Length: 388
Image (cartoon, rainbow, N blue to C red; front, side, top):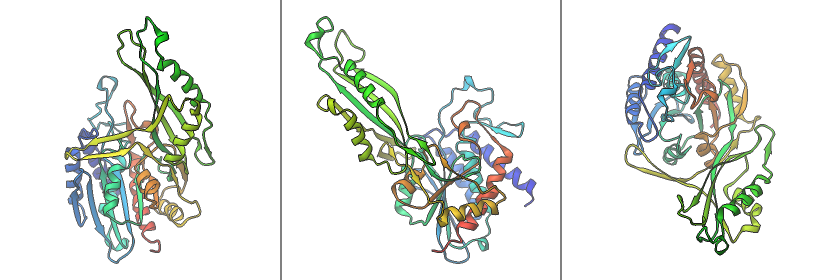
């Protein structure tokens, strides 16, 4: 195929993907479109698993490693009135393709499907899987973990916007729930009760005084109070007996669930009989009717700069005509499951910038989309050349 033919095919594929609304839990139509796109190219097997993710397999001419390329299908909601471009129009103008998911994460997805689908079998050894996963925007890594529990793979490439740089690790994410407990009483006689909101104010200050960890590559961890609600709510002249606070915590490599919980327990030691600290449990119903449940804790991870996977990854970018640059991904991805939880060597790579994700008038540069396709081909060729 000529460069012009590749561009036309890839842009058309991404346009199709963007034009299909695929909010979390409602990815079925896009899954069917992706399945057809894979079946129309040179994959050995394409199927949809019990949770709704699409899985394609392609074998090289000789045995070797097993590598999995993953990108998620789901997108976050839109307020159409805020957009100047139709979020599901796939409009092409100014060298850009506009629409929800164009950068996060359908650009990576279309590029991977096109790149691996066109890869000649004599160009690589071993087996390559391509997965289009569900529900990442709700529960990072959960659907990919289901796939990896069934398939033994040697490494994973996570497709996410990295400005076509090689992500050698990522920050993690967790949602902690802190409760301040009090005692109800009529608000006309507050001395008879114990107002949980007043206690929560002191606890918030204690949590703000916590020292967060730092990392040479990722910088400082982040912790933000994102919501607070008292019970009963609304109140009919009753002192709140409970105040629930939610904290979004951005994690660094080495931070564990139990270790992080202990940090909160230590900070709130003086309130230990009047509070609780826990990780939120998330239950997500997929479009197939299956339910995925998991603690909302997604660990950070980091690959060794001197290790073979990073070296081969950088060589792959160079082979694909992309500057061999690495960095630490500042957001959370499905890599929390593959690398953070399961210890599988993983890298993150994709077109566009994370600041365009979830944004009004989201778009992707077509030139960057094409560049990423060549890089995915280079990554496949280089990494599959690693010793088993």
